[in-house]
Image (cartoon, rainbow, N blue to C red; front, side, top):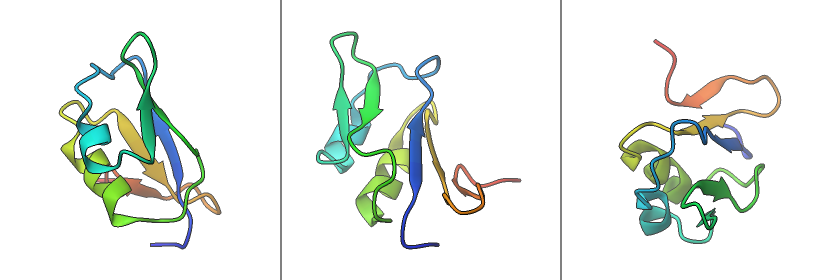
Length: 77
């Protein structure tokens, strides 16, 4: 994994479970429609952000390496 990640939330998939806020409260916020957004779309790589993505019940959080777009989560098959 690199030193920085690019984090996106697929809002067409997000169900507003707020699991991301439970695992990484400084990295995500919910808008008034309960859709998750990354606070910083290009944060330092951090275990809580990965835990948030892994805990999302619908895998709406996508993490890639900014330098080459390689998937961090969900992993490519």
